[in-house]
Amino acid sequence: MRLVAQIFRSAKGRIALGVIAAWACFQLWLTLAAPGKISPELSGTSEKVNVQIELPFTPERFHVLAFQQYGRVSGTDEHSIELRGVKRTDLNAVARPYWVTAVGPIKPGV
Image 1 (tube, rainbow, N blue to C red):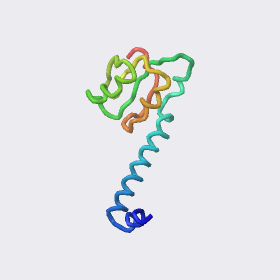
Image 2 (image 1 turned 180 degrees about the vertical axis):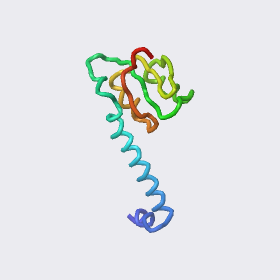
Image 3 (image 1 turned 45 degrees about the horizontal axis):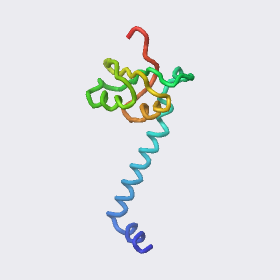
Image 4 (image 1 turned 135 degrees about the horizontal axis):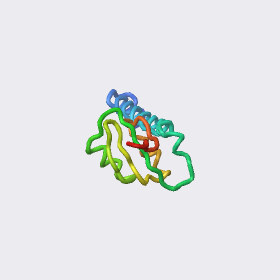
């Protein structure tokens, strides 16, 4: 108990606790925001879906590699990545990064 009191009394301890609280709030926000980024058009009963991930910038190699763990990247566009064979259970994980703006079905003719 004395250690906890010392942490709250010291400036470094309060700063460290503030940083930890800010990080935890950011992680909570990412988790709560992810389902809102997923298009209702992806609802269905199939086990896997093909999705187009919208980004606010041109995807780079890092972004393509980050999504390869969820499915096959079949192409990129100016501001999106096409991902095929994504399990429905992984849709929230695909939408979770802060740099993903939307996850929807692949647009026909693209």
